[in-house]
Amino acid sequence: MHDARVGACFRGAHQGYRVVSEPLTVAITREPGCEDLPLPAYETEHAAGMDLRAAVREPVTLAPYERAAVPTGLRIALPPGMEAQIRPRSGLALRHGITMLNTPGTIDADYRGEITLIVINLGQESYTIQRGDRVAQMIIAPVTRVEWRQVAALDTTERGDGGFGHTGLK
Image (cartoon, rainbow, N blue to C red; front, side, top):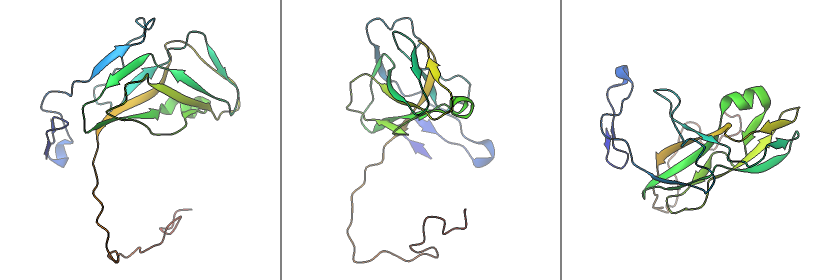
């Protein structure tokens, strides 16, 4: 399957997937005073997300259940048809209860403001975010636009309208 918007071709399931064309190029700027922070980067060869770092001027301590807007010092210009998804880092969530509200957060292709993270401490102890800490991850993905077709009735399925545990999950 080939998707020219993403610039990636995928091989058979036995091989997994691999990008065989050029990566997507995205324009990025840093806020003044944030030149000391690295740009988002993939930390491993097969990572889907790039780590985002806190561009806080002073450490931010979150008490349990407290939230804060944490700046990244970055602005991006995504091409039309693309979005950036902001997600929590699993290690912070497991070890400290630190996660993102509005997850996954969406950055639209026409947004040009600073990327700011809505961080919450769901842990039992206070947690301090330092300048340069990796606090979230960003995934760039294609967007599918929908055109609605109103119909008199939907097709039937075995599941039907069963939801909220209907499949046996407790």
